[in-house]
Length: 164
Ligand SMILES: [Fe+2]
Image 1: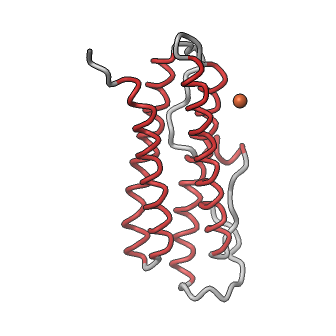
Image 2: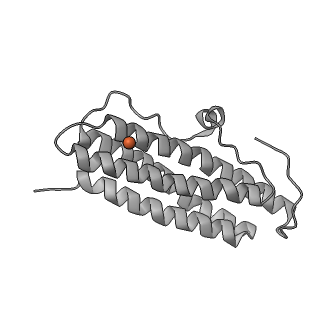
């Protein structure tokens, strides 16, 4: 969605800022959806590992909130408009819809792992285009988010990996 580009003394060229704002807003829609999916898991998980998973899913949501804030604010720093309304993200998010009928910890951990992996993939894929466009700072932000999401994926996915 094309929005007004605000005047700024930021010296990145206009076309670079425009491209980065679009990239940031796409990642923002996915990240906001992912944060809500983590909350959905936090609220609805049941079973023997309830308390650990209930708290872990909340930690995931909290960390994503920090990432979404940084992504949204970077779009605004570049002269853009952060697109973070529920109407925008329901249209723009590329994540699969979170299933509404899950109860067990294993199933919630699997569903949230899938969502984290999807977001991790697109975040990592956004690093190079940002660097190539000449915006090392946006590339750095995506690198930081991508590293954080890899860690969150590990924390959730570990519940699915025990073999014995
Ligand atoms: Fe809560």
